[in-house]
Length: 291
Length: 225
Image: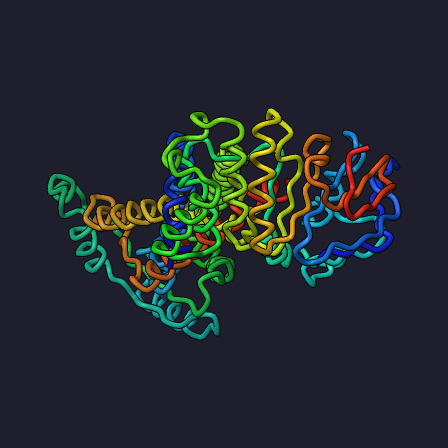
């Protein structure tokens, strides 16, 4: 008990010696953890959304209205016979007009201006594997009943590719900042150890174990690392909550992310910060202990 | 209590600090380790508390084979020894009381024990009037007394003193040696390195003399020749 109080007391005495370095360290850990938290959360949001889109319509085949509806039906049957196709919906011109009115309900002037007759009927194709959209395009091209083909797969692929690039860039950036935080912690501990070199020497002469001498430094590093990560995670949760109610969430993205995912991410980051602090203290104090 | 068999210490680069030393110090002995500066006295003591590692030979201290002691057992060895260096190594921001209680705190005593034992140690080294003074307010002799009290915190079986009177005038040196004799009478084995002839000649005790790393004399009631 006495040893524990010694360790805790000395942890805070050490931190009081270099307050600016402690603040810098906490900030570096905070930025790094915040980047990791928001990046991974953001990726989860994108994956949730794209997954929803991927479960929806993958290829829209706009039909030439000059061709008979019988030809449209034949095309639908032909599409339904493909093994890659899960389902085909025939969307009439009227249904297209209704959809347009819903999509642009906030722009009544536009709805009034549009001649709904130009909206073509279409076949909306749902695939077993969204990436097979190219096969459908290949087979439908040149068909006289087809006016135009649009595939959502391409857009999804582009979005996922962009997301992955952003995640990679943010991860590299987070690692660089984490490395800076690591060096800052080591530097802070080395300065403290230098200031306390006589105390460390006396402790070694008296018969204190290396672990005992190391503990206040280890607690300091873990405390700084945990503090930075906790603030970052708190800010991250706040940001997600704010985004859920934001304009972006209403218009493009559905900011849904499961609590289980967020809790696991939080626990993972906190555990990582403890391990991070432990290693930083190990490296930071090693030289002082071996002198 | 302390036994060395054919111990040598050669530094990197080949300079010989100690050469083929064999000797034994029994429980309750008071031994002076003498020799000129650079003769190997400090290296001899550092080998005993495993601050250095012998190139050759076997060292046995308080029933622990120091020469093959794993690193994690060094603190166990040092808790059985009291170590006083030439520089008292006091913590400048702490009073006499705190410097001594710090050692007890590190050794894991509880608060009540720390207070009681610190007071006892302060009485032993006769620093009652200086208990709440900082090191810069103490004389050299008083600082050495604090260092001795701190070294005694772990109730050591052996007190290793590396020129504790090196920076003191003759009167203060004699006071320190008298204190060490008092501690020795209570049963603690003492090995004191010194090159102060007046101390050694004052009371004839066992003398180990080193010269160029070799043990050239071992007399039970020796003087500084």
